[in-house]
Image 1 (cartoon, rainbow, N blue to C red):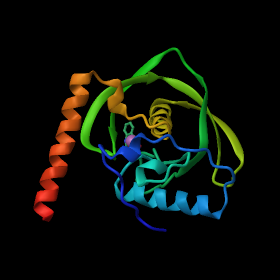
Image 2: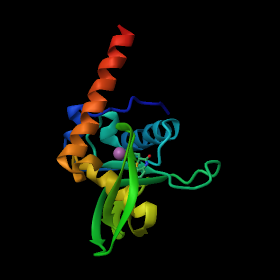
Image 3: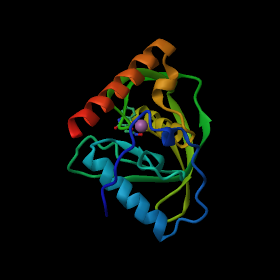
Image 4: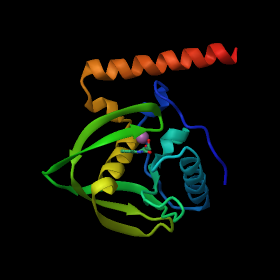
Length: 174
Ligand code: GNR
Ligand code: NI
């Protein structure tokens, strides 16, 4: 397994639409293993392949409360097959938008069809943090970030902060 670099906004790669996986072969399993290790290291509760620069429809998650008991989840080609009309609001963050948080409203429940680590087709009912997180990750696969749901003003403030941080970091490195 290997830890990969997580891309940070405004990296344009984060806006690419990811392509479906045809077969869950060893290459895809290795990708999922690397993504999981990268996500735990960050640390985060979810990661989409595009966040490490790979435009494939692959997501890993672990929303277990107890950090010692790892409960990894793997989603290949995840699709929302149903979503509730009822909404829920969570304070979201994103490893590609460091240190920025905002309340985002999404369908409270959804059903997700996907292929698991072994390429077996599954369908699950999601609610609570699981529903929020998988919707956040599927958005990544379509080039969408949580800040896209904010007003232009709030979004601009966050993007400007990240550009400023990046410039400061570059100045220190040089
Ligand atoms: O670590 C993460 N926490 C989180 C909190 C609320 C809603 C979504 C998330 S996902 C995020 C990791 C990430 O950026 N995944 O793409
Ligand atoms: Ni994210």
